[in-house]
Length: 204
Figure 1: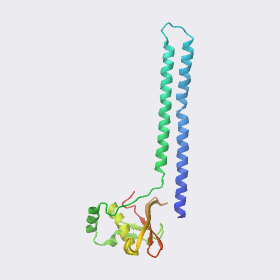
Figure 2: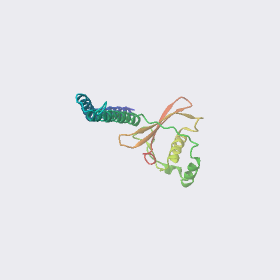
Figure 3: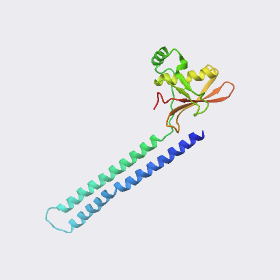
Figure 4: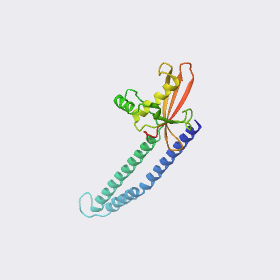
């Protein structure tokens, strides 16, 4: 849990750093449109002092309006890019969780089971009590891998929804860069148990 908290802190720091970079880029990208706006206003003011007999607007004033229009559109584009970057940064750093449906892709699960009659070949590694001692799922198929996680818990704790119930399931990223699934289950006597699975073989 300490490692998970450290990862969350690092993720938040990274998010704040990216947001600050986006803000700096916004300010830098607004410099040119700002000077364009000033130049356009200058053309308008200077053009109003010259009588060229060209109707309500002379060539300098028309140029000034065009420059101001381009500057305003540039401001809007820069701001839109900035807001889009913020949304992407925030979305990309939200805690990731997955929920699985055991009935999903049932045909695929059955095919995988026929190809792997020895279920022990699906597992290696440790006992799954901690992330460092995680059970390694060896299959490269995600439906089969998810099915194997629940089957492992059933081998240890009994039948699901009879001897135990799933409390929560979380997708974690270890300090080693690998992907882990954490299944927290509650036994019928009230005991809470954690099962960590290394799912790097089928999830990146």
